Image (tube, rainbow, N blue to C red; front, top):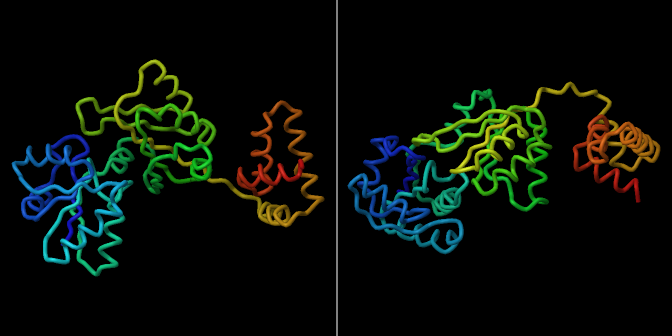
Length: 288
Protein backbone atom coordinates (compact mmCIF):
# COMPACT_ATOMS: atom_id res chain seq x y z
CA UNK A 1 0.00 0.00 0.00
CA UNK A 2 1.15 3.53 -0.76
CA UNK A 3 -0.12 6.27 1.55
CA UNK A 4 -0.17 9.88 0.31
CA UNK A 5 0.15 11.79 3.56
CA UNK A 6 -0.77 15.45 4.03
CA UNK A 7 1.73 17.35 6.19
CA UNK A 8 1.64 20.83 7.81
CA UNK A 9 2.03 23.91 5.62
CA UNK A 10 3.62 25.76 8.52
CA UNK A 11 2.35 25.01 12.00
CA UNK A 12 3.51 21.53 13.03
CA UNK A 13 0.48 21.27 15.30
CA UNK A 14 -1.62 20.71 12.19
CA UNK A 15 -0.25 17.17 11.78
CA UNK A 16 -3.20 14.78 12.14
CA UNK A 17 -3.19 11.75 14.45
CA UNK A 18 -3.88 9.48 11.49
CA UNK A 19 -0.95 10.95 9.52
CA UNK A 20 1.40 10.41 12.48
CA UNK A 21 0.20 6.85 12.94
CA UNK A 22 0.68 6.14 9.23
CA UNK A 23 4.24 7.45 9.18
CA UNK A 24 5.08 5.34 12.24
CA UNK A 25 3.92 2.14 10.57
CA UNK A 26 5.16 2.32 6.96
CA UNK A 27 8.44 0.74 5.85
CA UNK A 28 9.78 3.81 4.04
CA UNK A 29 8.92 7.45 3.31
CA UNK A 30 9.26 9.16 -0.08
CA UNK A 31 9.98 12.87 0.28
CA UNK A 32 10.29 15.88 -1.99
CA UNK A 33 13.19 17.20 0.13
CA UNK A 34 14.54 14.57 2.52
CA UNK A 35 16.07 17.25 4.77
CA UNK A 36 12.69 18.89 5.35
CA UNK A 37 10.99 15.55 6.00
CA UNK A 38 13.82 14.39 8.26
CA UNK A 39 13.15 17.44 10.43
CA UNK A 40 9.41 16.68 10.58
CA UNK A 41 9.98 13.03 11.47
CA UNK A 42 12.51 13.99 14.16
CA UNK A 43 9.95 16.38 15.65
CA UNK A 44 7.47 13.49 15.76
CA UNK A 45 10.02 11.05 17.18
CA UNK A 46 9.85 8.82 14.09
CA UNK A 47 12.79 7.15 12.34
CA UNK A 48 12.23 5.78 8.83
CA UNK A 49 14.33 5.23 5.68
CA UNK A 50 13.85 8.23 3.36
CA UNK A 51 13.72 8.12 -0.44
CA UNK A 52 14.19 11.30 -2.46
CA UNK A 53 11.30 11.68 -4.91
CA UNK A 54 10.75 14.98 -6.70
CA UNK A 55 10.00 16.44 -10.14
CA UNK A 56 13.45 15.89 -11.66
CA UNK A 57 13.98 12.27 -10.55
CA UNK A 58 10.38 10.96 -10.68
CA UNK A 59 10.93 8.97 -13.91
CA UNK A 60 13.83 7.09 -12.31
CA UNK A 61 12.52 6.75 -8.74
CA UNK A 62 8.88 6.07 -9.58
CA UNK A 63 9.48 2.52 -10.89
CA UNK A 64 11.81 1.80 -7.94
CA UNK A 65 9.06 2.74 -5.49
CA UNK A 66 6.53 0.63 -7.38
CA UNK A 67 8.87 -2.35 -7.22
CA UNK A 68 9.18 -2.06 -3.44
CA UNK A 69 5.40 -1.94 -3.14
CA UNK A 70 5.12 -5.04 -5.36
CA UNK A 71 7.38 -6.90 -2.95
CA UNK A 72 4.97 -6.22 -0.09
CA UNK A 73 6.38 -3.09 1.55
CA UNK A 74 4.21 -0.18 2.67
CA UNK A 75 5.34 3.31 1.75
CA UNK A 76 4.31 6.89 2.45
CA UNK A 77 4.63 9.84 0.11
CA UNK A 78 4.91 13.36 1.53
CA UNK A 79 5.64 16.76 0.04
CA UNK A 80 7.57 19.54 1.77
CA UNK A 81 4.31 21.09 2.94
CA UNK A 82 0.66 20.29 2.30
CA UNK A 83 -0.98 17.62 0.18
CA UNK A 84 1.17 15.47 -2.11
CA UNK A 85 -0.25 15.44 -5.63
CA UNK A 86 -1.04 19.17 -5.64
CA UNK A 87 1.50 20.92 -7.92
CA UNK A 88 4.08 18.19 -7.31
CA UNK A 89 4.94 14.74 -8.76
CA UNK A 90 2.58 12.91 -6.40
CA UNK A 91 0.11 12.64 -9.28
CA UNK A 92 2.77 10.72 -11.24
CA UNK A 93 3.18 8.00 -8.62
CA UNK A 94 -0.62 7.66 -8.32
CA UNK A 95 -0.78 7.00 -12.06
CA UNK A 96 1.98 4.38 -11.74
CA UNK A 97 0.06 2.65 -8.93
CA UNK A 98 -3.08 2.54 -11.06
CA UNK A 99 -1.17 1.11 -14.03
CA UNK A 100 0.47 -1.51 -11.79
CA UNK A 101 -2.79 -2.45 -10.07
CA UNK A 102 -1.38 -1.51 -6.66
CA UNK A 103 -3.42 -0.11 -3.78
CA UNK A 104 -2.98 3.44 -2.55
CA UNK A 105 -4.91 5.83 -0.34
CA UNK A 106 -4.80 9.46 0.77
CA UNK A 107 -4.40 10.60 4.38
CA UNK A 108 -6.03 14.07 4.30
CA UNK A 109 -4.20 17.08 5.66
CA UNK A 110 -3.57 20.80 5.18
CA UNK A 111 -3.69 22.32 1.70
CA UNK A 112 -2.39 25.85 1.09
CA UNK A 113 -4.76 26.99 -1.65
CA UNK A 114 -7.87 25.71 0.15
CA UNK A 115 -6.80 27.45 3.37
CA UNK A 116 -5.99 30.67 1.52
CA UNK A 117 -9.30 30.67 -0.35
CA UNK A 118 -11.20 30.49 2.93
CA UNK A 119 -9.01 33.22 4.49
CA UNK A 120 -9.34 35.54 1.49
CA UNK A 121 -12.93 36.62 2.01
CA UNK A 122 -13.47 36.10 -1.73
CA UNK A 123 -16.40 33.83 -2.74
CA UNK A 124 -15.55 30.11 -2.64
CA UNK A 125 -18.63 28.60 -4.27
CA UNK A 126 -16.50 27.84 -7.32
CA UNK A 127 -12.68 27.63 -7.22
CA UNK A 128 -10.28 27.19 -10.13
CA UNK A 129 -6.80 26.12 -8.97
CA UNK A 130 -4.08 26.67 -11.58
CA UNK A 131 -0.84 26.05 -9.64
CA UNK A 132 2.13 28.22 -10.67
CA UNK A 133 1.98 30.71 -13.54
CA UNK A 134 4.62 29.66 -16.12
CA UNK A 135 7.69 31.92 -16.04
CA UNK A 136 7.90 31.83 -19.84
CA UNK A 137 5.75 34.70 -21.12
CA UNK A 138 4.33 32.83 -24.12
CA UNK A 139 3.48 29.77 -22.03
CA UNK A 140 1.74 32.02 -19.48
CA UNK A 141 -0.64 33.59 -22.04
CA UNK A 142 -3.24 30.74 -22.11
CA UNK A 143 -3.40 30.67 -18.31
CA UNK A 144 -3.76 34.44 -18.07
CA UNK A 145 -6.56 34.29 -20.62
CA UNK A 146 -8.26 31.61 -18.52
CA UNK A 147 -7.97 33.87 -15.45
CA UNK A 148 -9.35 36.81 -17.42
CA UNK A 149 -12.44 34.83 -18.44
CA UNK A 150 -13.05 32.92 -15.21
CA UNK A 151 -16.24 33.71 -13.31
CA UNK A 152 -14.91 31.44 -10.54
CA UNK A 153 -12.39 32.40 -7.89
CA UNK A 154 -8.88 31.52 -9.13
CA UNK A 155 -6.03 30.36 -6.88
CA UNK A 156 -2.34 30.46 -7.84
CA UNK A 157 0.90 29.63 -6.07
CA UNK A 158 3.87 31.98 -6.37
CA UNK A 159 7.35 32.45 -4.94
CA UNK A 160 8.62 35.74 -3.49
CA UNK A 161 11.00 36.00 -6.45
CA UNK A 162 8.26 36.06 -9.10
CA UNK A 163 5.34 37.63 -7.23
CA UNK A 164 5.92 41.14 -8.66
CA UNK A 165 6.11 39.82 -12.23
CA UNK A 166 2.93 37.79 -11.73
CA UNK A 167 1.01 40.74 -10.26
CA UNK A 168 2.02 42.87 -13.25
CA UNK A 169 0.60 40.19 -15.54
CA UNK A 170 -2.58 40.12 -13.44
CA UNK A 171 -3.01 43.88 -13.89
CA UNK A 172 -4.04 43.07 -17.46
CA UNK A 173 -5.77 39.74 -16.83
CA UNK A 174 -7.76 40.65 -13.72
CA UNK A 175 -8.09 44.43 -14.04
CA UNK A 176 -9.97 45.90 -11.08
CA UNK A 177 -11.02 42.56 -9.59
CA UNK A 178 -10.16 41.98 -5.94
CA UNK A 179 -7.11 39.87 -5.12
CA UNK A 180 -5.94 38.46 -1.79
CA UNK A 181 -2.24 37.76 -1.26
CA UNK A 182 -1.84 35.15 1.47
CA UNK A 183 1.61 34.32 2.82
CA UNK A 184 3.19 32.39 5.68
CA UNK A 185 -0.13 30.61 6.21
CA UNK A 186 -0.44 29.05 9.72
CA UNK A 187 2.96 30.52 10.68
CA UNK A 188 3.82 33.33 13.12
CA UNK A 189 3.91 36.00 10.41
CA UNK A 190 0.74 34.89 8.63
CA UNK A 191 -0.58 37.76 6.53
CA UNK A 192 -3.37 38.51 4.04
CA UNK A 193 -3.26 41.63 1.89
CA UNK A 194 -6.24 42.60 -0.25
CA UNK A 195 -6.67 44.96 -3.21
CA UNK A 196 -6.41 45.15 -6.98
CA UNK A 197 -3.24 43.91 -8.70
CA UNK A 198 -2.04 47.52 -9.04
CA UNK A 199 -2.70 48.28 -5.36
CA UNK A 200 -0.90 45.13 -4.23
CA UNK A 201 2.09 45.96 -6.43
CA UNK A 202 2.32 49.36 -4.73
CA UNK A 203 2.21 47.67 -1.31
CA UNK A 204 5.01 45.25 -2.21
CA UNK A 205 7.18 48.03 -3.62
CA UNK A 206 7.14 49.57 -0.14
CA UNK A 207 7.56 46.25 1.69
CA UNK A 208 9.70 43.68 -0.22
CA UNK A 209 7.97 40.30 -0.68
CA UNK A 210 8.90 37.45 1.66
CA UNK A 211 7.70 33.87 2.00
CA UNK A 212 5.63 31.72 -0.31
CA UNK A 213 2.37 33.18 -1.61
CA UNK A 214 -1.08 31.96 -2.51
CA UNK A 215 -2.85 34.42 -4.82
CA UNK A 216 -6.65 34.34 -4.63
CA UNK A 217 -8.35 36.20 -7.50
CA UNK A 218 -11.97 37.21 -7.57
CA UNK A 219 -13.90 35.83 -10.55
CA UNK A 220 -15.18 38.27 -13.14
CA UNK A 221 -18.82 39.32 -13.10
CA UNK A 222 -21.04 37.14 -15.33
CA UNK A 223 -21.24 38.52 -18.84
CA UNK A 224 -24.53 38.46 -20.71
CA UNK A 225 -23.40 37.43 -24.16
CA UNK A 226 -25.13 38.69 -27.28
CA UNK A 227 -26.33 35.54 -29.09
CA UNK A 228 -24.99 37.09 -32.29
CA UNK A 229 -21.38 37.11 -31.10
CA UNK A 230 -20.91 33.36 -31.56
CA UNK A 231 -22.05 33.71 -35.17
CA UNK A 232 -19.65 36.62 -35.72
CA UNK A 233 -16.76 34.62 -34.26
CA UNK A 234 -17.58 31.69 -36.55
CA UNK A 235 -17.72 33.90 -39.64
CA UNK A 236 -14.42 35.61 -38.79
CA UNK A 237 -12.75 32.24 -38.25
CA UNK A 238 -13.97 31.19 -41.69
CA UNK A 239 -12.45 34.31 -43.26
CA UNK A 240 -15.53 36.46 -43.92
CA UNK A 241 -13.92 39.48 -45.62
CA UNK A 242 -16.81 41.87 -45.03
CA UNK A 243 -16.97 41.14 -41.31
CA UNK A 244 -13.17 41.28 -41.06
CA UNK A 245 -13.22 44.76 -42.56
CA UNK A 246 -15.87 45.81 -40.04
CA UNK A 247 -13.78 44.35 -37.20
CA UNK A 248 -10.70 46.28 -38.37
CA UNK A 249 -12.72 49.47 -38.77
CA UNK A 250 -13.99 49.29 -35.19
CA UNK A 251 -10.47 48.62 -33.91
CA UNK A 252 -9.15 51.69 -35.79
CA UNK A 253 -11.96 53.81 -34.36
CA UNK A 254 -11.16 52.63 -30.85
CA UNK A 255 -7.49 53.50 -31.36
CA UNK A 256 -8.40 56.92 -32.77
CA UNK A 257 -10.49 57.56 -29.66
CA UNK A 258 -7.34 57.18 -27.53
CA UNK A 259 -7.34 53.47 -26.67
CA UNK A 260 -4.05 51.57 -26.87
CA UNK A 261 -3.79 49.18 -29.83
CA UNK A 262 -3.70 45.96 -27.80
CA UNK A 263 -6.59 47.07 -25.60
CA UNK A 264 -8.60 48.09 -28.67
CA UNK A 265 -8.09 44.70 -30.33
CA UNK A 266 -9.08 42.88 -27.13
CA UNK A 267 -12.15 45.04 -26.45
CA UNK A 268 -13.53 44.98 -30.00
CA UNK A 269 -12.67 41.29 -30.26
CA UNK A 270 -14.83 40.54 -27.21
CA UNK A 271 -17.77 42.25 -28.95
CA UNK A 272 -17.21 39.89 -31.88
CA UNK A 273 -17.16 36.81 -29.63
CA UNK A 274 -13.36 36.40 -29.79
CA UNK A 275 -10.91 35.58 -27.04
CA UNK A 276 -7.94 37.92 -26.67
CA UNK A 277 -5.57 35.59 -28.55
CA UNK A 278 -8.13 34.95 -31.31
CA UNK A 279 -8.68 38.71 -31.74
CA UNK A 280 -4.93 39.39 -31.99
CA UNK A 281 -4.50 36.53 -34.44
CA UNK A 282 -7.37 37.60 -36.71
CA UNK A 283 -6.46 41.30 -36.55
CA UNK A 284 -2.84 40.42 -37.40
CA UNK A 285 -3.93 38.44 -40.45
CA UNK A 286 -6.13 41.34 -41.50
CA UNK A 287 -3.21 43.75 -41.22
CA UNK A 288 -1.08 41.54 -43.46
